[in-house]
Length: 198
Image 1 (cartoon, one colour):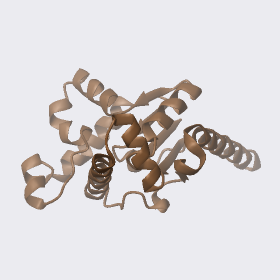
Image 2 (cartoon, one colour; image 1 turned 90 degrees about the vertical axis):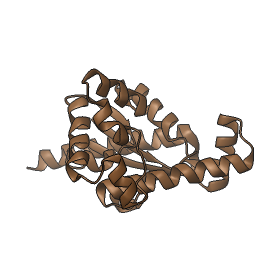
Image 3 (tube, helix red, strand yellow; image 1 turned 135 degrees about the horizontal axis):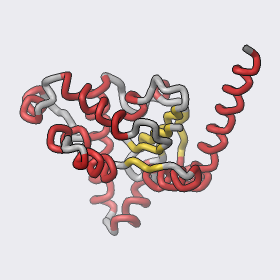
Image 4 (tube, helix red, strand yellow; image 1 turned 90 degrees about the horizontal axis):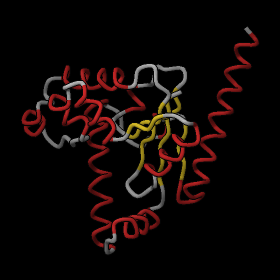
């Protein structure tokens, strides 16, 4: 089982991913875990920009970061697959909906929420005033959109690129976790029914 989580800044995506990993008893791959695994394989420096989800804003910038070579992205995608091979996991960001799109056991999710709710979450979580929270939210949303577009050609957050999109601001963190779990169970039942009919 692979669950991929893409998320707007302040939508609670990391907390949701952590709860899912705990509830299913599977591993969580966030930026820190990917960095640790890449270092163990002595491949962190080569893939640092990918693991850090460095945004690409211009051709000159991408040249400076070494992203001009398309094979670098492909190697980063392959590295993620190698680090997670034969594992059941929840993975956050890193174009994971794209990387794992051909796996039969993948569930791809995008978490979003109303801006005001996200701002309030960021203010509370990071002890920020409203202005700083807005700046943080916009900065990371822009980074994630730019990164996804450059690495995959896909527009970040567009529903058709995910199996499930959820407004965590409406149903909360726990409600979102429960909805994802129900969705996965429905998928399993549907797949089993299809196999039984063959």
